[in-house]
Length: 72
Image: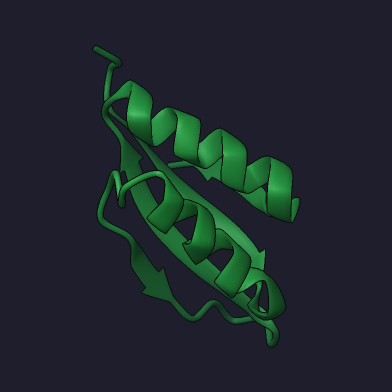
């Protein structure tokens, strides 16, 4: 078990489909909360990593999209 950590993913709008693809392939391991940041062309996604499945999904999605990750 992993200590729960909250993250915010900053991703370009054009890469949202790729991010969601990886989320689906990994069995939708966590809830996602989408928010519009103050920068055009970007989206913020809030999520919490509580287990290995979510950690693997997030690592895979980050590698595929090159999005930025911020620990909250």
